[in-house]
Length: 320
Length: 294
Image 1 (cartoon, each protein chain N blue to C red):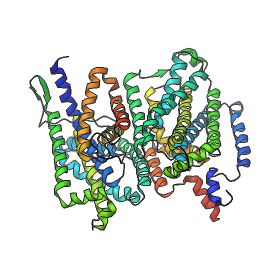
Image 2: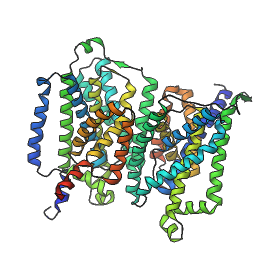
Image 3: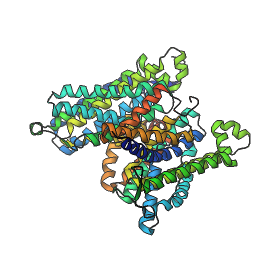
């Protein structure tokens, strides 16, 4: 490892140069954020932070399959939606405790991901992208066709609704997904996944089972997407079930990852904060046009700035 | 189940499938030649539908005739998109090129869809043709004229494309580039120009498909992704790069959907395409009409 250039080790640790300092800093930051609901009862602030946490989890989960494993997933909304659908149904309709419904939502997303992942990962190229786009869209249309239009909470659940618990759950999920990405990057498994991204044949030749590594990355990714969906289902008092499958969840996840920095650990966090804050501003002033701006920004990042904000800032620092 | 009802369903599947086929041919052409997978193909189709809608609303032009305007308009849009966007990924190695083209076109879907919504609102629009109103019944099978005319227009477009690719010098250049762009380049073919025109041709095909969709279904800014998906499933069903196989596979998907609606009800018709897609990957990855795995 000593002969490796500094840039490479930095990349393997996900763009973080002094991991221990960062770890302490992150724990302190999460702890401070966790007590925010005790200090304030401004619902707008808590709602905004909830959206940021959900975005962090979406970004981290997409980054694990798209950034670490290098597989373009165009149907993240499917896993998010399945998580929401299953959790909502078990919790609000069937009456199971939420913790159980939450886990079931995540596992259902993993199950769906495997149905798509196993056949498409056996072949290389565009099949995974098509398969994920397909499962997202098919689930959205089928939910719209086959399920009741609105999913509303029963009255007893509305009466006991409290925003702080949603807030804490989303924060915990954002932290857990970031921690999972960190642990993955520093594990043998994660190195194998990165190796598959860089060169599948070379990875195979050194004894890395490419199919297995891609599937594990997909399982972790879809688990967090499903849990994020379950959190979404826990948060909303009433929503259209179709909405949880809307392609904009995929757009959000991809956009956040690329704007922040594809394949880095803090990229999705930076991207999520930037994206949610700018979006909330633009959505008010520009209504429809704000998504056009994000679309153009995304294309520019892919073409001209493949490292995202994280890469941009480190390049600016180095120049100075 | 009377044989008449079965025949009616098959014929209807054929009508529906001709739209899927036409939507897929352009996508397949672009992927086969440029190795660029344009997931904004459905958005181009949607724009074509709006061109038809506005021509009909503002000038009263019959929608079937507007295909003659729609194709050149989309051709120019395709030129612009290739020149300003997809041209940048042309020189990358194949794997990176496919990945980046997916991402760029994914961003493009967001741009086109929301721009359409801002410009033309989220309302569903549709047009009707006065040239071919009504229908006829042959041996107990209802044949609406609009559907029949749609099928004929789709077939004519495919035949024209076939003639272009097989009978002209340009077509030869396209086929050569698809097979091996390096060898084509050595043989004196302007590969960059071939890419540019092929992409524009793919967009023009999406435009004609959009015309047919606006007549037989309805057009809204959000319909693009559903048509992209149909086209993608059809392209995989046919085998990636099999251009004319894509039209046949479109007919197969149309009929399969119609049969499933008959058996399972309309709510689950979208699932059919996904199941066929997964089955093909497991059983015959080179596709129904593909000769080699790519």
